Image (cartoon, rainbow over all chains, first blue to last red; front, side, top):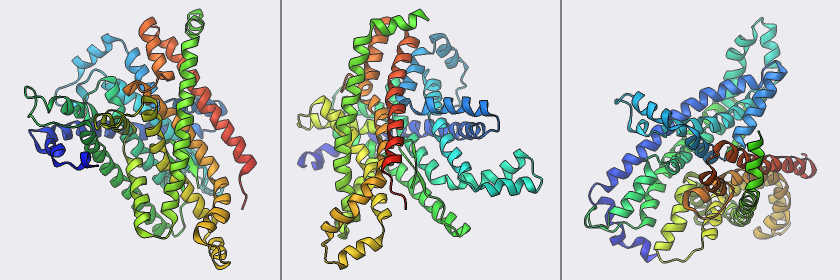
Amino acid sequence: MSYLFDPANWEWLFAGNNLRFLLQGFLINLQIAALAMGLSLVAGLGLALLRVSRWTWVKAVTGAWIDVWRNLPLIFIMLYLSLSIPESWRVAYQDLIPAWLPDAFDSPFFPAAVAGLTLYNSAVIAEIMRAGIQSLEKGQGEAAAALGLSYWKSMRLVILPQGLRRMVPATVSQLITLNKDTTLVSIIAIQEALRHSRIITSTSGSPFLGVGVDAPLLHVFLVTGLLFVAVNFALSLLSRRLEVRERERSGVAVQRVSGIEDQLETV
Amino acid sequence: MSGLWEVLVRNFPQFLSGFVVTIQLVAAAFVVAVVIGVVVAGLRVQPLPPLRLAGTIYVEFFRNIPLLVLLFIAFAGLRRAGLDISRFAAGAGSLGLYTAAYVAEAIRSGVFAVGQGQIDAALSLGFTYPRTLRMIVLPQAVRTVIPPLGNLMIAMIKNSAIIGVALALADDLLKEARVINSRTFQTNEVFFWAAVGYLILTVGTTFVVRYLERRLVIRR
């Protein structure tokens, strides 16, 4: 405890540009998360729609696809993609990307990271959205059909607005998981918060490379962790706000479906 | 196609040992997660505000921190702080503490599902608060909690893959796959069999959970 709270062990935080360097790394995590969130939501909705399709074989194929990707470890998927993408593609990618894009895009492994995050999270989100669509009373779809709405119109105007709204808490909790999982890209050699943290711990104490103040690993990683806790906690507060507002707006308690760590749980 | 089988047959002992280590990691972490999870859930439902706050802080901290950061703190950080902690304990312990936050939440919602009426009835019969929890609430809550616990087990199997490749804390399935791959360069074949290993564990657990759910769930 005295080691943890010793002020000498916290000096690194404001020494040199350590803090700025750490935040720069964290920003890369957020950029990757934002891109992967957008892609996963779009792909997840597409998969969910295919999953509730009227054609049995489309349903079966989509179901198998979803079950495979959401039952594999995300780090497994990322590692596989980063190892199996040929080097010529990586070189081509680096020549291709324009300079004005954010820093996160610079790494040759960036496509593998985003593809891995998207493959995995779109499968989980598809399953969440499917549960939302299927939790609606059957009468809703029947009423829409009776009013003469086509399949796609009743989907767009009746089913999806209600079904997806129910799934907001579960979806946000999955997005929090996604945000945490962006740290895994450090394993496939992308410079982000964790890599920057390690650089701080290994250079800061050095009189040649750093600022001459020792940066203990425990303290550096606690700060990094708290950055994630802060952002994710804000996201979960937002999700709770949305849930309460939804209850007030519709007058009925939304069916409690909360995502727990990539799994779906109806409570 | 023959190459696919060849990779499995040649490296079978290594695949198997990785598979077993993954199961050991998850089993050890599961024990930690359930024990700590029950304690934290207990903190969050008991009436004293400061203890309840401690439970809430635990849940919000461990649920929102990346597991990888936790692994760095548990292994490298604590070692440098002078605490001698074994590789396996650091890996399984971090995974357990991380999942305990989710377990606590699952148990808490299970406890609330029991209903205030029963708790009030027990208290008015003269049960003390701990006795009410132990004899009235927990036996019912445990059953409600089995499906979410099973889901957390699946999440743990997947999260355990981080332990080996990130910090070399254990030679689990993914770590072994990477080692085999760096020797043979047959990436597709090696990762195919590793995927089969993980799917056996996760999909297998799904079926076990569904079975238990049907057997044990209380219908209200």
